[in-house]
Length: 476
Image (cartoon, rainbow, N blue to C red; front, side, top):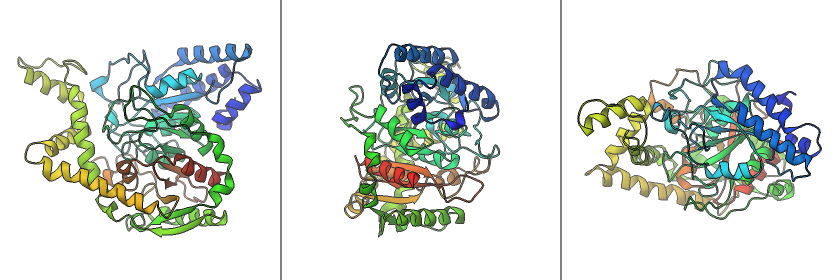
């Protein structure tokens, strides 16, 4: 069985028709992981035994006439900041190198109830801080399309797993573009749902007001089915709400053909590589040929998004990561006699350079005398950015923009230049600040040797619309 010929939809249909077994499917993906993980470093942990057992249970259920739900028997890879009971969860950090989860994340619990098969944990930038997956304490991840290039971050392992056909679906987290940017770099679909549409319970927190779990897949349709399986209210996450998504709405092609997409002036800027800019124009022409209308819109406060994000995100990270002090949580280093010595020794040994940089920055902007000057103003700017989107969506159904200014860059190219690294998320950050749904879709017009994607953003709770527009493009 060749995993390159499979999708989540094909697996579901094959299991229903008993064309193959869940055990055969799982074995095929485990073999693909064994063949390629050595060179790509995608998986930190592979659940060969438990995945095989889960697949066998699915086969027994099907043989007994049990229901085959869309996620039943479908293998899923999971970013290593999403908890699975009894399995390690490192968040890509030495600080949690030996931590074993004691409960399932909300999304994992839902997928287990539907019979999904978990293949293992994927590599990531430490505590989801990074745009290249070079910040992992357990080695960098390579892009399956070009081993000399980054897969993007921080969910680079999850994106690369799908791109390398090691999994038909994977879960990542998106705080400032950490699903969409690696999807763009790896040539797969990456979807960040509306903030609150998917539970964050069991997600190791980075910035709680921005974090969102979402799917990777090779098609919008597969991503939509996974989103349907994980969305909705969770009593363990008070920011989540009742939300029901029906993937069958993807088939309402006439509805999506009649939509109007906005083109924001602020996203078509100097610094975007020509191959990306040309690709966006080709995507626009494709949509126009399908009957979709376009309209210019303005998001004037977008110019403040990057600065706003790199105040709010480090501030919340500083607060969230303070718990990893070696006393109750995280690695313990006995260094000296005082409590201060233990704290310094533990955090110095446990956190990597990028994590330390952002913790220090976040602590500074929250400190006495600087809170009003930085953090308070950033929160106010966030509201202006959100209002820009609200006004734009009064006249358009969705917004189209580049996902990132460049294709995947070389390993090591930006690792010593934090500012250049942060700029790779310039087009994805505003959606997180506004809490709106956004998706990156690989372009079929792309004639570059490297993958290039485009981004669709929609109003809050209109996830179905951007998924539908994405499916319309892929189905054409």
